[in-house]
Amino acid sequence: MARIISIFNQKGGVGKTTSVVNIASALGKLGKKVLVVDIDPQGNATSGLGVDKNSHKTIYSLLLNSNFEDGYLKETSSKNVSLIPANSELAGTEVELVNLEDRELRLKNALEKFENDFDYILIDPPPSLGQLSINALVASDSIIIPIQAEYYALEGVSELVKTYNLVKDTLNKDLEIEGVLISMFDGRNNLALEVLEEVKKYFKSKVFKTSIPRNIRVAEAPSYGLSVIDYDENSKGAKAYMKIAKEIVRNNKR
Ligand SMILES: Nc1ncnc2c1ncn2[C@@H]1O[C@H](COP(=O)(O)OP(=O)(O)O)[C@@H](O)[C@H]1O
Ligand SMILES: [Mg+2]
Image 1 (cartoon, rainbow, N blue to C red):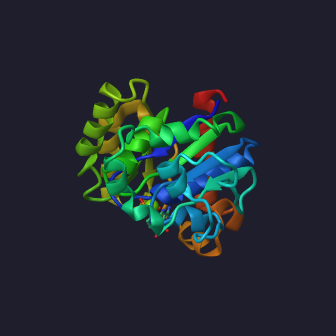
Image 2 (cartoon, rainbow, N blue to C red; image 1 turned 90 degrees about the horizontal axis):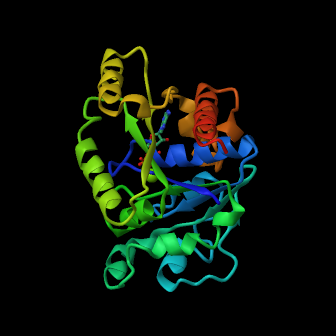
């Protein structure tokens, strides 16, 4: 059975998609079978892993029609990594889901079909706290919280934790925090160091030992449809994401 992890932070631009793509790729390099599930209408994880956003059979039809036929799993540019794509079709889903009785369970039910074929399933939710994000939290065993080490980093974290606790108290009692990931870290910047200390005070041992440095190679890779590990495995960004994947494997013993 796969360990299902959502990369969760309702703030945009904090490194969610970058982390989904690169953690997936790094786990794949370690020999794990990984499925990335893109549930952001922007489809950045889809294009970032070299999959055509105009693909047939996206997460949209899987969620709305519970259409469990084959053809949803796409091959990506990264070894051992498969993907269920998303595109702008998904934008209306927030509204369409509201009318369904099992609206919070759609993703969980849809993923059951794939759970036995993968070691890890990573979900990339949109930057909001709507139905799609709730579906991600309900379907997951755990969340990784990416936090950008900047002035407003902790703003919104209490809201995030509130949502996490709400889901844990109601729809998914077993939901855990897999880890808190410092993204785009610049160790020469005193503010970034202060933020890191604040985050550690708040989340304690949940903070991953490895931080992801701000690294131009990480930002360049998606325009080639590659993870940073496939784009430049010797870059600082690639090495940091490999270390995070090893921490995840160690913590899960799988
Ligand atoms: N470690 C990093 N170094 C440099 N740029 C980064 C890094 N991580 C993310 N970025 C860039 O920051 C922007 C936002 O990241 P993204 O993963 O798309 O955030 P989100 O999915 O949370 O909106 C993107 O342009 C991405 O390329
Ligand atoms: Mg994103």
